[in-house]
Image (cartoon, rainbow, N blue to C red; front, side, top):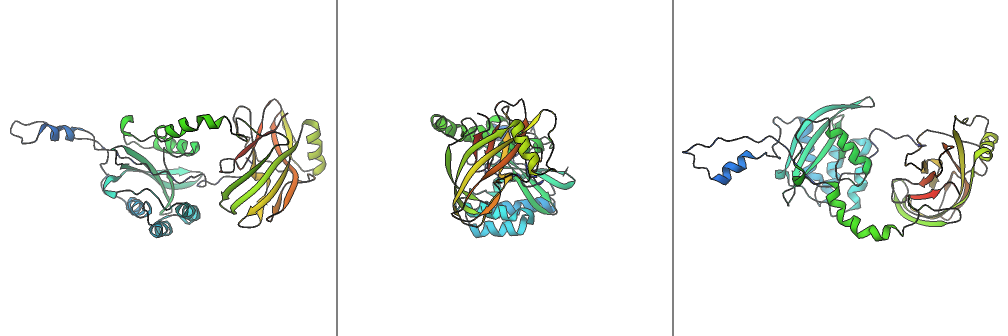
Length: 358
């Protein structure tokens, strides 16, 4: 990828589905005991909402945050963000809070802190805390809270629509020793998405500009979406030309003698786009090369950082409402990659895919 990712900023705020975990005590039946059979049976089952003893200050903070943030009161949500969320990600949480007035609520009587362990990643040390909540159907949902510098930094959920977020949850969950509830009691991503997948299967084949049906040269698409930095955006984008091989390398070499040399088995692909910014709420719109990613025919993202200067015309520029721009962006791919694709605004609501070979 052309843009670096920070330790925290790979988040889609967790969907609010909930769970719990704990060890159940086996009760030996005594003849004189007045307990009913159903009471005895219930005591032999695991209590998935059994909270750990002696909660730390950070764990108490998580419970306070949950009680205030997961509510339909926007002012309470914003107050919880300002008080408990780390400054690095407060703006993102505030954006999500303002996006809906219908946030699912959590009953703290059915919410439990299960386990906390220290965690270190990329030189940053923090704590990961596993929580569970029971929903109205009697099923459980697990969430993992990341705490660092005594503030909440992130929330991970196994039901996130983002596959990388689900993978991150699984990786963190593997670091914890708490038992996982049975599958029939656990809320899963597949359960939440099943109906939507069935209803949209017929329409998906008709969609264009997707990875399975990318746009080609001469096809223009209009995009209307909300951007975190620019607000409401409406733009047109069209792929005009694709240059690869020796011709692309010659343009890169002539553009600037310090541009990156080709590695063994690599080639440049230059894609010329025409972009029209019809609407942008927070001007100017930053049209830059980092908005584009190349993905191989095998599905792997080309993540080597490259910087090419001197291309004429260059696509990168700041555009005000009504402006148009035509120019080249660049990709470095494997020569033997038969069908690399370019993705504009990958992993966003504006994501659109283009074919990079004829």
